[in-house]
Image (cartoon, rainbow, N blue to C red; front, side):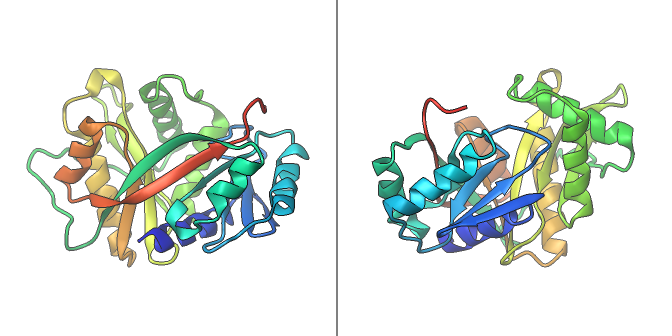
Length: 251
């Protein structure tokens, strides 16, 4: 599965508005934000970079005034981590990921009705809800709402549960398919609505949507045992690991 996940990461970055390929790496940039979680690189499966290759990669970020950062499945390119470390990169995090297939997907009782956004107001409400859910890691913005709309319009999926006040209680997204798989990301519930099955509802609905498009699998990363239980409830199972590395004292 690591090769599929890494091949997906490469294909997904190539969808960014600006793409640079640097000596075994693909770098995706979005001029609408300086966020290192949007602007980052990933290696091609099997890449074995030299120090000169890493220097060129760093230069691609510096040309744009951005922090050099990578996300990748380390088992798919075993030589990359050591090469990055030689050039001063450090590990931000190691995340496990879970995968779901059409045969493992389940729909437990008590799930909420899930909707697909269609209006500017709904996309803005989702962006605002996710900003609140992730405790200010990013601010709600017109650009964030536009990215959600592009995800839905470009073959991915955005789903949300409507709050009693008509806004968004919680939401998540799936990237468009690549190499038969899709990444489910940004699962967030506003604090006032947590503990009610909203995350499980949008997760199940998104997996169903991608399987209807022909996906063989959907994968996601999780943080903490509580969120893992939510995803396992709808059929996600252990997959592998993803590594996050960046050059410190940058940006």
